[in-house]
Image 1 (cartoon, rainbow, N blue to C red):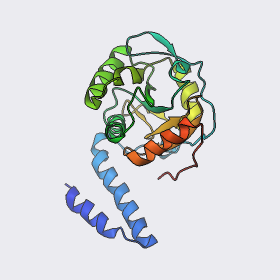
Image 2 (tube, helix red, strand yellow):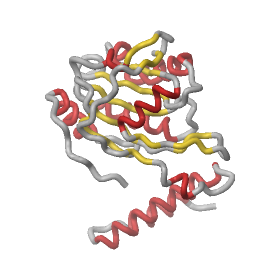
Image 3 (tube, rainbow, N blue to C red):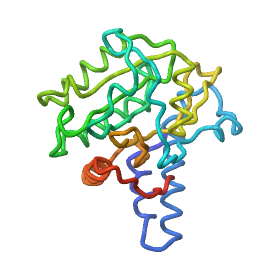
Image 4 (cartoon, one colour):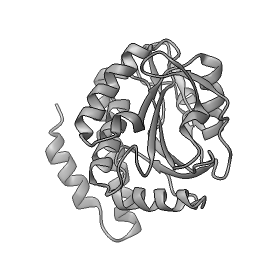
Length: 237
């Protein structure tokens, strides 16, 4: 067994101000992630499969607002129903994901709870499942959990959890640059992690990678996107 606390400490010691130190730190982080997740897989993932995964920055591109999904009540809605007068934070997950999607939603929640802006007032959040097998019932369960933890007024009308058919999902994921694959061996999806900030008219304005999103940066992105301003491309690791 790996002493992960000791390993993490060693990684932090390796991180310094010199490029070599940062490279060592990145290598340690990748190795630690592999050590943590390897027992969950029966065998290493196919490198060709992994290369197909990513989140491309399609800044300035317009979302297909005519897409039709089901909301957490099972009602048919158009993506454009959530746009028009305020920016939107978009997250792509699947509700029965055993690990990463929960971390994405938890990271988003942590940031939202720090913001001075309120979901449902200054901006909305739209979370879409990219698994066409998932149902509005699953979406409703997720909404109850995360809106409850957020705990602010009007969040119920501002944070939306959607499901949809494969063709609608494909159009959305292609538009935002979200590349994922289904792994037959594990029976799970392999995907990138991140969120997007969209302008009120449905234009991709900013990408945030990983599972932790700096509240100050997210708030600035919302302010800028509310003014229809498109951010610069950010580095992704």
